[in-house]
Image (cartoon, rainbow, N blue to C red; front, side):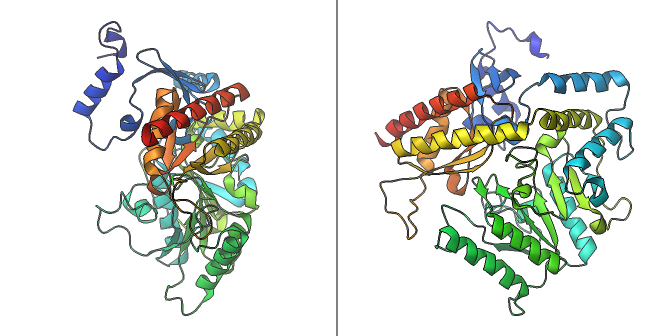
Length: 456
């Protein structure tokens, strides 16, 4: 049945489609439970449901849609690729389009094609993460990996083993062995209970000492994998000095440093890649989401000395997605030519400033943080006692109510962080100042309504 065969006057309601979805799809579906709508159209920062209601989208495909929905250049690229006669998938055979995309993407990595080469993976970020870990083990001959609490690297067996959140891990046994978790700095919830620069300094020292202590009990790892800004973990930004120390130590000990830029990359943080804020060069960069312009694509950027693969060492049928390379090329060009990283920086500074003003009015906003258009708002219960460093207990119930109130006020956003207590904004990089003002207006109204509903 085509979309057009549904009679809008009789059947085109959100409830109709959501009911059918629940009848035909697995229980694994998640977003429809929090954002109960069926989308009919989308443009820019706006989506319209089947009932004609418009929503301001600060979810953007979990950060995938850097240029928002149906950007004209993206649509034109799809049409041009279809009209060109190129095959839609080519395995790892090259085409002129793939050649152009490869050269453009390499130009954004530090040192460009002189320093890095690309590996095209299966179409998900999780597959790219798996490839990165396999490559590190192949290169070093070692088997263990260091990951960090709060990190998110995917839902496959290997990537889930390196993910901090326990909810998806508790029911799955025999995940990839050899993963050692270490604490990740957190400006509001310091894992050492120190807070501020003291906490950052202690964690920076702890990492170096852990690697170099011959009595640490852990053998030298093949790789260290981390996000320069943890996304699903609640928009937690890595301190510069900590990242620089990790780069220094891993380089000294020939440990492969893998930066997962799946969500934070491609202008979202105010720079092309979030690791650039610390002026470091990873050995492997994991890229997906925005890199394909809204279509499935995942790529590794590999420093040439670490390219230890034998032919067919990691394969995947859909690693030659020509449509995604065409739309990805358009995204790269648009980010560069329209200076969208700068727009993300400026719009993000405005949003954070306004959200911090709201925190003065609503003490349940415990912390506002992030970089660029990757922003987290931690919701707390200010009626409870603070901990030793002044942080208040998380209020997951209120955070969920705020997300629901935002939906009712036609604002789409996501939660994350410990217990889902962090409201996350992942606006398209093209968002305007006027739209940012609307985000704040709708969010403020939603917080007030949620407080009344939850606390009376």
